[in-house]
Image (spheres, rainbow, N blue to C red):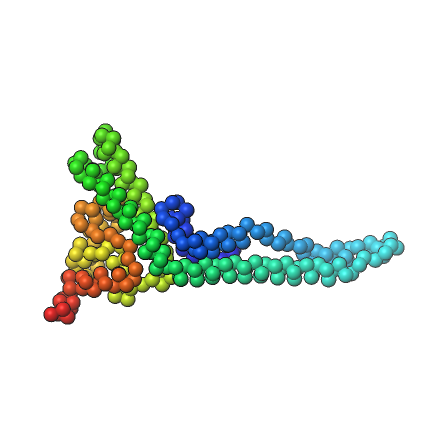
Amino acid sequence: MPEQLPCPHLYAGHDAGHYSLPGDVLKARETYRSLEAMPWPKPPQNAWETVQAVAVATVDALHDGTKLPDIALIEQARQAERVYADALDMMDLCFSTAVQRARDTLRGQALAIITDHLRPAHDATWQAYTDAHRVLLEHGETEPRRLLSAPSKVRKASDTCDLMANRYEAISAARSDLAMRCGLRSTDDPTGKYAAIRNYHELHPTRWATAKPAWHGLPARRYLDWMADHGGQLWMPTPDEQTEAALAELHIGNPLGQRTAA
C-alpha cells in the first residue's frame, strides 16, 4: 500500500469547508492525488509458467517433428518480471517523495496554518457558538431534546450549536494532527493543557495528575456549553503562546510555583 499523506484530519476539515489552507499545501496534496490516479503497471506472466510452456512446446515439437520453440521466451519473461519489479519500486519511490514534499510543506507552513487559517475559523466558530448558546440561556433551556416545541429562533440557535460543535471538533482535530506531525510542542506545557484553553488552571485549579477537570470526557456540544457557562477562554495558540499561558498560570494550584513567584 502506498505511503499516505500526513495530517489527514487537516485536509478533511478543509474539504468540509471549515477553514482554508495555504495554496502550496493544497498543491502538494494535488500532486499526491495525481499519483494516485496514475495506472499501476500490470503484472506480467509468471516466468515459471513460461518455462513450463516452453518445456511442453519443446516435447510437442520433438514428438511432431516440428520447429522447436524459441528458448529466448524464457529470458524475455524474466526480463518482464524485472521491469515490473522496478516499476513497482519506482511507484513506491514516487509516493514516498510526494509524501515527504507534503510533509516538508506542512512543516514550513505550520505556524501560518495555525495563525492565518485555523485560528480565524476557530474564533469565528466559538463566537457563533457562544452567540447561539446565549439565545438558549435567554430561553431558559439548552438541552436539545427539550427544545422541540421552542420558538423557531431558539431551535435555530440549537441547530447552530450542533453545527458549530461539529466544526469545532474538526478544527481541533486538525490542530492536533498538525501539532503531532510537525512537532509543534510547548516544553512548558508537555501535556497540552493550554493547547485549547487559555485559562486552564483558572478553571481547574489543581495540579494533581489524577484529578480530572469537570469537562473531561464531555461530548463536543456539552464541552462547549460548559466552557461558555464557566468563562472558558478557548483559543488556537502557537507553541510560544501556549508557553506564555502556561507560565502565566504557573502559580495556580502549584505550591512550588507560588514559592518561586515569591
